[in-house]
Image 1 (cartoon, chains in turn orange, red):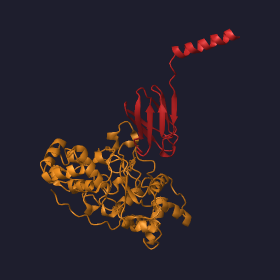
Image 2 (cartoon, chains in turn orange, brown):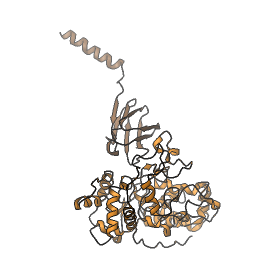
Image 3 (cartoon, chains in turn green, red):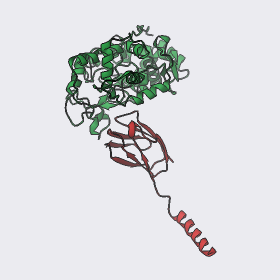
Image 4 (cartoon, helix red, strand yellow):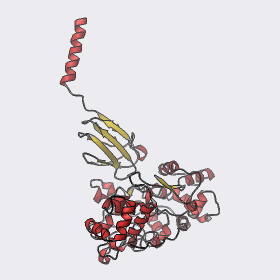
Length: 349
Length: 106
């Protein structure tokens, strides 16, 4: 099932099929050092916005379900302490992250990883930095129960929600005859999360044909992104992620990332999922450990090539970018943020 | 001549009864970060050989009635796994999760 995006975020004539084709094709680098108009047009096609949000057949979109999910997402009573909600770490004011270097858990405990955004996760293939959840439904109930995070056993949460008459009523309306359950909590939150889609950005308007939508520096940055800087080898498709796992040479801590979930694969040591780049200038600090404060720091990291170790992704090589080219890349990334509609707060039952 | 044909037919029938069908090995490619083919029907006892004919390393995970982690398969290498239990298996690359293969074991 798919839900069409509102007109403010629609790009005419683009189908879901185009999305898939674009993502697959994005794995192929456009190698020309000085691309012509046809090359640039081909590059643009790899990033065309979709017109509709994909919802899974086993959890189709329904407005009341999304609204219930939003209410749960903003409700601190989902945490054992009663002071943390999902939105505490996934705050719309910070591009659905939290602005901290690493996430803050129960009792203000500093966690190991930077809070990932929930923007455009309807298109996600796998979830969390290490891919330990294979659906948004599984992801949605993970942090609620995680000991260091919201720390609420599911049985406790279900009893708590059942004790709130407003929730009982809402769950019965959305899931007649089923009421409050782990499955329905997960389905509601996941449905709400799928509605969080980045708004049309200046970059999208340029892709759609408005040459004045972005500056010349950003246009140069886009070409570098797809050629010399090789960013597109991982940051592919309209959400700018391949949803794959790479060691990009960040951080020498004992956090081995994906390798903890899938042992026996040396390439997965220190490998984390490629983050999307939409609204990226709202989402500092950067990388899985939040170790880079600015986009300039991130570009500098890739220019230097990262920590050399056996698991380092083969695509990670020092880049010969001059200062202007580094600035152009940042200028391009800054065009990936649009005017998202303000998020209204739900009234909690 | 007719007698010989009858004897041969009888021998063939005996063989069919005495020996079960041999297990087969089916090859799956991984070029372009895709499993080819992306669906497969095999018999219990058959093996699937995952050939990494791609330019990057892959890592095959098998989910289903029996789980397998084949570990990494570098470019140019191959690994096989035998499917003894009937059912539906979902295969993914642990590095590139968009790579998917469904195997039905009869």
